[in-house]
Amino acid sequence: MNKDIVVGGIYETNNYGKLEVLSIGSYKEVKVRFLETGYVVLSRSDKIREGNVKDRYSPSICGVGFIGVGSHQTTKDKAKVKAYSTWKSMLERCYSEYYLKTRPTYIGCSVCVEWHNYQIFAKWFYENYIEGYQLDKDCKVEGNKVYSPDTCMFVSARENVIKASAISFNF
Image (cartoon, rainbow, N blue to C red; front, side, top):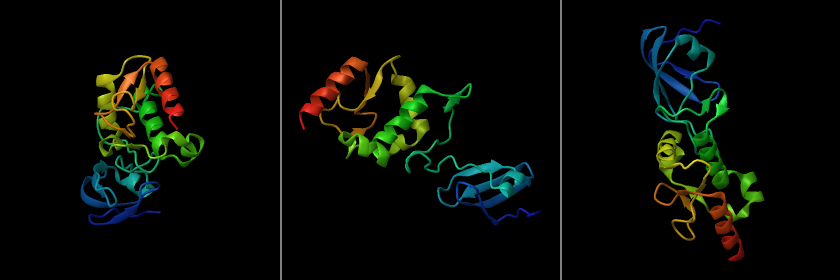
């Protein structure tokens, strides 16, 4: 099937909705904009035809988290990096229906909007992470329900267990 790519044309992707072709420099340099998020990227015409253009601003994790654009990778040598695993787990604790059913103490918790973007979270992570420590939202601000740069810190597993036990007994 030969579908000509044209400026102004709207094309469906496999996983990210529709995109519009903004300009064509060559078959390797087609500038597109995703209609839902507004993300603009250069792609190849064959990728557009196949529907294989990725929207890095599409909320693919728990309906809110997206990878964004930047230098922070999600994998290294085919394994998830610690920053990504921590980010994804944080989002799941707040927004996964399954997780909230099995761990109801997280009902009402949320992640600040800026941390929905993995690139922003990863920058904070690498500036603050202590090897072997865990992300915590309760130690800095008692009773806190929001994960954010102002409320989170890394704590030892022991500190985290003690804090979690104290919170459990308050219910």
